Length: 122
Length: 107
Image (cartoon, rainbow over all chains, first blue to last red; front, side):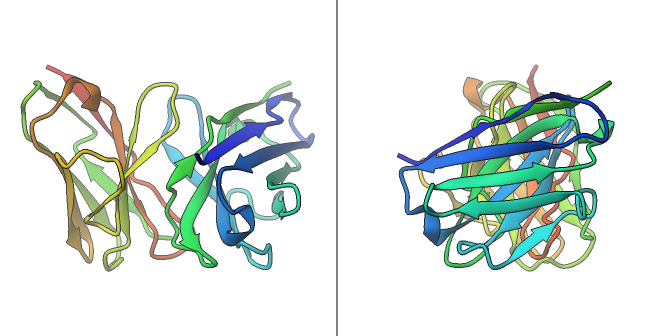
């Protein structure tokens, strides 16, 4: 069965960096685009970034563009989110999510991880 | 960016009720509209994609309709496990945006 397991969250000071990972199993990782979606405590969902199946295309929300980098290692079935220059408003649960379209981006999310909490605080 | 507006923000309903949630896009998104259910402390779950397609494994009491800018999610005969927050999301163009959510509570 499809599984997505995030890790790397924690407490970090403003201005510092953190890298999240999402390890996937149960499907052909290299055939699917993947997304990061975040949710601030008590708030709604916010899409953050997407990477195409082969890593050749990436797109970001304006709120993270220039600070966050999405990447993937298809040999390790792992998705990453490098987060730099973190701000208090980046505090959220970060979910990785699979795009259901093979070799393309449909833009919705059929499988989600359990999420990892990032807290930006001094 | 495309803004998504859901209504109502919350509602109270009883088991067995028919519930309708609406979602409006700030510009036409064709049928690129998806619905998710989220329970406290859990990841969202895809219910409906492309406005009216039922995700595999989702009960048939959930249905979606609409196109262009106006969409609805309908739950016929609300069940105890359906009390949750529901989000719409557009997949027409990046940034992929969500509605603010509709919390369905027990009356």
